[in-house]
Length: 299
Image (cartoon, rainbow, N blue to C red; front, side, top):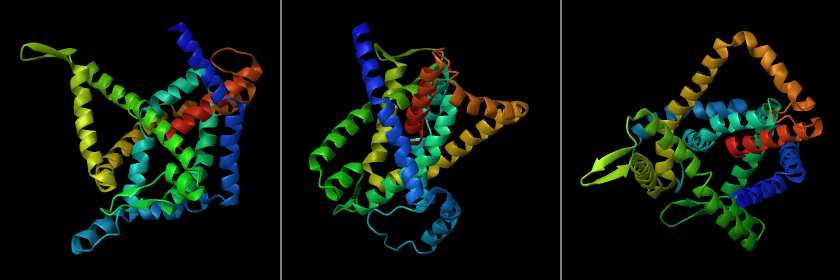
């Protein structure tokens, strides 16, 4: 087990080394410059599209027989679907892990990669729409693998991306989220196992099966069902998340300026929680901030 852990740590150090960190920041900065800060210039327009949700619902009620474009979901549903993948365990446990390992400076790099990553996410979305495929049944198939295959004619690279994407969906995409839900439910219950007939079944298994059935039922419905469910659940989830954060800040408002100063100072002075030397600490803060930031915002 120790050997396997060491191998994983070595792979992590190679993958999340200086080249990848520089590439992620450089690509985000380059796209921000080329697109002339589109994530800031069109922020108002994006908010207007979100606020149109009520108008869209009213129009749908008044004209229920209006045929939609195949695969189309509303701007609001598209935003909620994106937020559904961005707001979760990564925003909570990921930040805690980044601070515990990389120090408070990691938060600075998480903010930077979030700001620059918006331009990257926009570019990904535009390419996904440009190279998507609409099947005969109206379901949409798209993503980076289609961009690679149809845009760059790199079909082998697209297959590799799809393969590793499937592997990632079973780990960071599913296991972390479902494990967080299961742990939360088990913590609230007085027992770990329940009696089913003459057998005993772990609560972990029951909750996991319920999650699998519910999620599977939504996925079978395609992007339309995903957009509908996200449009119903994510607003409550996002508002609750933001309110919880604002409450914490409000209860400690007197420490806000000192906290911001500490975050910025730690990002460039190398005060990492691991207690390494200055250069290593700065790199650790950058690595943890960028990696957890990418995991959180999925840019």
